[in-house]
Image (cartoon, rainbow, N blue to C red; front, side, top):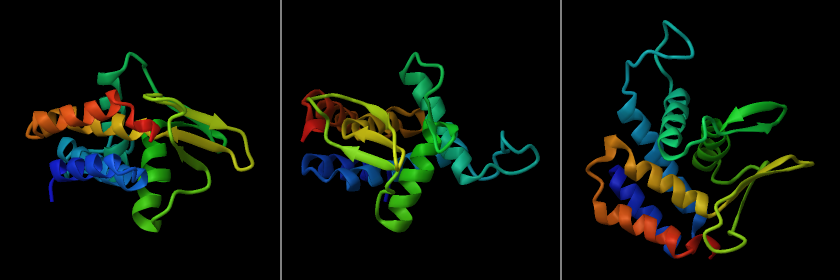
Length: 173
């Protein structure tokens, strides 16, 4: 299977309203892209002298990709008593939980866009304290993967189809 296949799966799942499955496909594609950007043997930036681990690859890819897409210098959230980067939330509370436990944790909410093309990530007080993502975040993440330099082989038509999903407001489905 390839990154392109994961993005195609995500597109099909989105079209059928299967948002968690689409999210998982996109997160797998993100992890694979992170491995292309930071292959085995890449030195860790967080722990000098060690090899970069999977979570660090993933989080760095997210940070770099967001920096290319947005003028925001950083995208972090106060969560569980710490300021956490967006990549950590995606890796630890979404990718790992969906891949290993087949479910989202109670601390993460995932809901339809309140109106078409309403991309939002919000914090909600608890208990339990929650971070809530709208469905359009999945489309944004898919586009982030599709536009990564390492994925130059992703067909332009597929990237356009992903962008069209966002433009047509499927996040509200």
